[in-house]
Image (cartoon, rainbow, N blue to C red; front, side):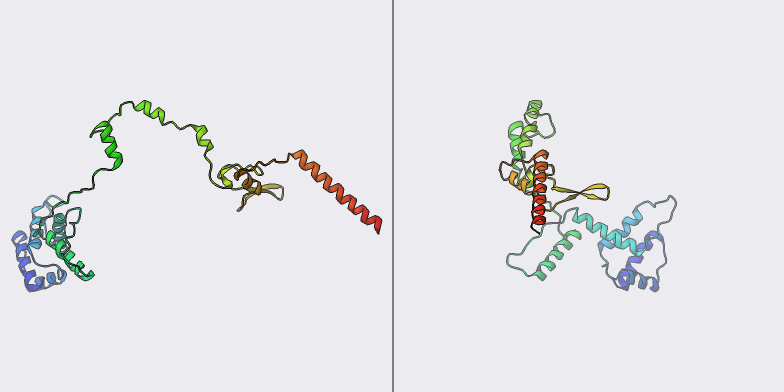
Length: 248
């Protein structure tokens, strides 16, 4: 609004608060509301402001430019509603700039009250689950007790043994025979750090775990067999050392 519009708006405000309006007042209000047009919504914002009780009893109401701006915006948003109106496309093709201009015009038409904001009926229908529920138990099935609910719940109890048979694909789908890593957990390697034993996660599972996951029958060596094999290796090394000493 310009200075003339601001002067008229101030004159409308003076009808409520008996203020004195001068040229400086009109100039200041025009500067503060330079991007707000002087229209019916601007005067309606003033009327709503003075039609509302003050926050504290006995307090004098005195409207300022920001009250007009906020009140006018609130009126327009109330007409638009919580959902923006659907876009009405033209009969032919339109460019991006034409779409923006047309969309702004449509929103402004609803915000100013020139075009009523009509709700659009959703025609998507109900989902397959909801439709089946209505077919079995009626339209008001949601929220009420379903006949035979306890029996149906009993049928839905999952057999833990059946769940135990489900395995993840790959080596992590079985327990590692080497390091005893559980299903889904990575293999580990036990090492010593000083006087403490530490476990370190391996990026690649043990080969025996991959073989078991592939369905191979793997026979793991017992601690006794491992000890016997190590003792035999040591004996062979000692024999080789003795032979080399005799040859020299």
